[in-house]
Length: 384
Length: 133
Image (cartoon, rainbow over all chains, first blue to last red; front, side):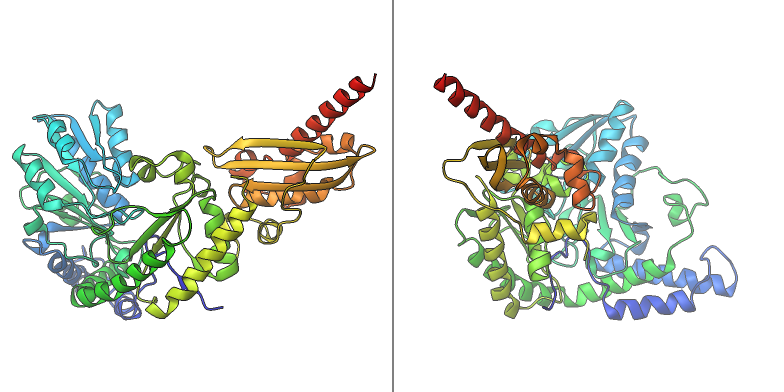
C-alpha cells in the first residue's frame, strides 16, 4: 500500500531541488562566514544570498531585517524575550492569543517569573482572536503582542492587518509566528504591518535546522544567545550554512510556486472536508473559510485521537496528526482545542490532515475510505 | 513501523483486539476511567464455579488502552477469579512486551477494570447466597 503522507504540519520532505542546492554548499562552500579568507567568503556569500531570498519572500524592507536562527522555536524565543527584556523600562506586560504555539507561550510564562505579566487573548469557536478583548487588554505597559498568522492545529488564519492596526494604536510591537502561513498564503510584512515575524525552513520544504526572525528596522531587542556577534549581534554562533542555504532556496521556490500550488491543494482540501464531514457526528474544527489552503481538521465523537492516528498508519499507511492528550508529552489535550471551547472529551477525538506536494486529488477517495473505516472500527470498540 | 515506542505485540492487539463486545446478563461488570481523561474501559465476565468462562470488553482510549484491554481479557479467560484478582497492571504490560513509560499509569487501567468486574461478581454472588439463607 502506497504511503499517503498528510502530516505536513509536523514535518515536510525536503524538496529535491533544495537538497541539491544546499548540498553544493555543504561540499564546497563550507567556509566559516566570519573567516576573512576566500573560503570563508564563499560561506558568507551563501548566507547572504539566502538572506536576500527570504527577505524577498515576505517583502521585507531589506535583507538585513532577516536574522537566521536554528529554527522557529529559537526565532520565537528571540522575538519574545528579546523585546520583553530590551524594553522592560517601558513596561512589563505581554499579550498573546490563547492559541499561540508553546514556543511563544512558554518563553512568556518564563518571563512571568522575572516579573512580567502575561494576558492571553481568547479566541472564538472558529479560532479567530477576539479583537475587542485585544483592544481592552492593550495598555501603555504592554511591550509585545504575539498573534500567529495561522494556526497549525485548526488552520484558522487571523486578520493580521486589522490586528496590526489595533496593536500599533498603542505603540506596541506586534510579533507574528507565520511558519504555517509563509509559502501557503501571501505574507507581506510591510502591508500586514508586522514588527517581528517568525519563519521556519522545514515548513517550506527546506531542511530542518534553520529558521529566521524578521525584525522591522527600528525595533529594539536584545540577543538571547550572546557570543561571537554573528547575525548583527542578535544571534551568535557559527552559521548552519547547509540549512540556511537550503532555506533560502526553499523561500525562492515558495515565492515562485505558492499561488498555483495553494490553489491545487485547496481543491483537495475542500473535497476532503466535504466528504469527511458527512461521517456521522464528525465536525470541522477551525474556521470554515478563513483557513489555510492545505489544512483540514476534524473531531469525531466517542473515539480518541491517538487511536485514530495508529489505525490510519497501521491499517492504511496514511500519516495524520492529532491534538489528543494521549499523543502529547504532557498528557494534556491541545490548548488550542480547549481555547476554541471544546470539552476535554471532545478534544480527545481530533484529527488533522495537512496537504503537501506529494498529495493529489486522486488520493481523496482512499483517504475518505480509510477515515470511515477508522471511525467505524474505533466506535465499535468504544463504550461511549 | 513502531509508533511512539509501542511494542509489536501492543500494535498487534490494537489492530486485532480479542474479546471485543458486550455480554448480556453478565455475572460481573466493571467500568473504570473517565472520558474527560481520555480513557474509559468496560469489562463483562461470565463465571462458572469461580472460573472466568467468558469475558468481553469495550474501550474508549489510546492505542495502549485498547491493547491492554484486549491483553487482559486473553490472560483472564479460563482463570480462577482469585487468580485473576492477583493480575496487576505490570503483569499486563509485561505480557505486552512493555509499554512506553508515559503510558504505564494513564492507559493501563485494564487490570483495574477486570478487578472491578470480579468485585461486582462477588458482590452479586454474596447477595444471592445471602438471599438463599
